[in-house]
Length: 261
Image (tube, rainbow, N blue to C red; front, side):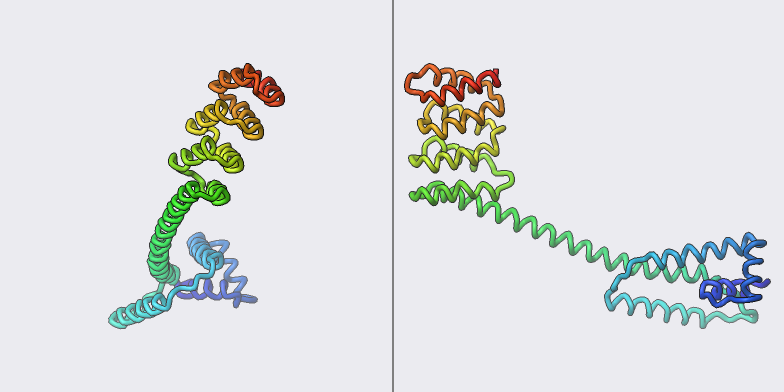
């Protein structure tokens, strides 16, 4: 069987247009001819790849480039002069066209990818600027004369994933020095989220020596016990020795000290 007839059979087979004697002829040829089977398998791989390919909506320029490519191909073929019609390897030709389409699509999506990276960088820059603005607003609120505004400033910490040292120090200052008990307590509760920070640990230990509000004292003792901060042992023992320390505070210390030592 000549090459053209083999190619026509393959095309008809994949178009499901073979029946009767032609289908039997095709299956017999497929069974007995390794080279024919190889070419059929190549076609099958190609069509399977097309079927599995997800739908893509290319830009209008892609269609224009593709049609231009086909036009150039036809013009080049028109220049070929020969006395004998040469058989066309449809598999090879199809692969060349598919490769051209893939190249154009790749160029299109590379441009989209580059554009996406630019937008991503711009978004990251905007996020960074937003965080800086929140930090500035937080510091400003912590210095406000209104206690409610200072508490509002403390709560800004919830919007900061990784606050810098200036923010932590500002909160520690509010916990240690603010005249309003509610502000000190709010600052203390905010700092417990960063209790592994050395700045926070030192602030908690200092607060043990200066804080007189029982609710804040209890909260600080529990936080230091939880992280088993050994530097807290000495100030806790001093609180036990002081006569003006509330009994329930002493009891909390007695419960917590063995967990540290």
